[in-house]
Amino acid sequence: MATVYRARREGADGFSCILALKRLRLADPTEDTILMLVEEARVMSSLNHPNVVSLLDYGRDDMGRPYLVFEWIDGMDLRGLVAARARRGEQMPWSAAAWAVALALRGLSAAHERVDDQGIRRPIVHRDISPGNILVSVHGTALLADFGFARSSDRSTLTPTGQLKGKVAYAAPELIHGARVTERSDLYAAGVVLWEALAGEALFRDGDEFKLMARILDGDVPPLETRRPDLPQAIYDIVRSAMSLDPARRPASARAMGESLEGVLLEHGFVRPERILEDEVRKARG
Figure 1: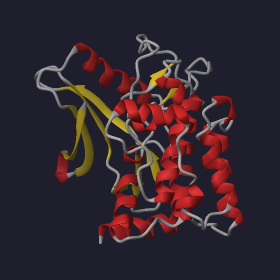
Figure 2: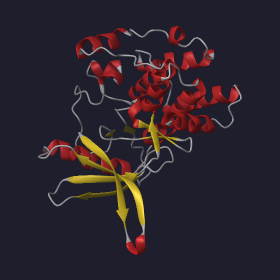
Figure 3: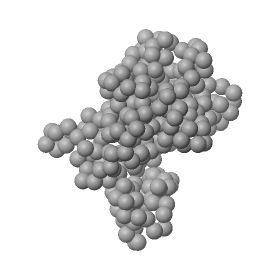
């Protein structure tokens, strides 16, 4: 839908800073496409969390097309980190993968637990949780990005039930069935992301979307133990729970899932896991 550019903003007295500029790809965007970017601006303006990429500005260019300005995260996305390890014939340390996803879940919990100015709960469902939307900085933190497909309970125009948004490979089974999206749909996607980060490979790789959907509906998921036999049992349990076909069997919330991952890290002595992520970015960059 859009392209993100690395941009420089210049100001008075030689001031300048690096930002991320998001613009629509289409030369002649449709009204629906424009509304999606406008909605992303509205949603992200209400989120202020250290594990969510900050929206700094919104505007329209000379042709009336909207654009968004975000903080620039110096680092790589989680997909790039996993791919860098795979090129070396390696897998990410489980602590690094677990910490990156745990931090993204902190950001996701802020979206799911959002309240409006009147104190009324107005959850935002991301709908596009994927390794490419988890950014890992050179400082060892991870942030959730790209709320372009997000669905907020207080938005004026909702995507009709039965219309699938986001990447099919991370879509929860109930969404393929056409059911209403919920916070636990995001947790399924987070489970897929964690499986892939730990296994070092894509889970659902079939190029045929209908076959891919069938695999998801059947729960056709290779046990993580067959790809990564060196993990704590609790990690296998968290992944299996998040990817349950029945939403009710998934973790109670993004906060609960993240706290479970952080608990496993603490139990195994990882008090400062951000140092591990710093090292992953450094190695990936060569």
